[in-house]
Amino acid sequence: QVQLVESGGGLVQAGGSLRLSCAASGGTFGDYAMGWFRQAPGREREFVAVINWTGLSAYYADSVKGRFTISRDNAKNTVYLQMNSLKPEDTAVYYCARGLTRGGLLKSSSEYGAWGQGTQVTVSS
Image (cartoon, rainbow, N blue to C red; front, side, top):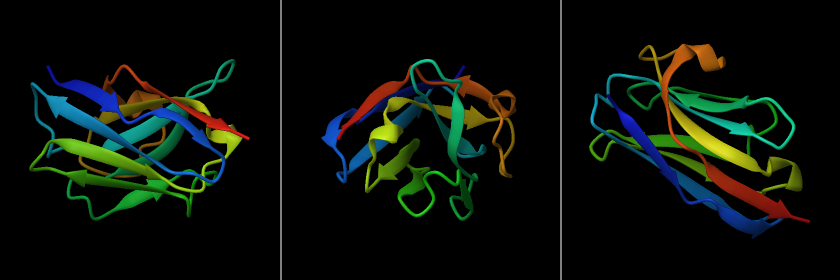
């Protein structure tokens, strides 16, 4: 049973940057796509980004395209989310998740089989 632990969240001013990390243990990491989702208070969890098992293909939500970059290091069983030019509307709890397949545009929560506990990102104006 894979376990996912996110880190790197915090409080940042608008325009700033954060890098989130998600470390996997207890299961297979390199054979699956990995994704990031976020959930703001009172809103549904939404897709942010996904990267395929090789790290060579990634997709982003329109709201973060050009500002966020997803990457992975399979040797370290870790996936990252570099967030630049942060906006107050990026404030949310960010979750990493392991996909049920190796790749593809996995935008739905139902396409993921394991989730981390989340890390809070707060962007002040």
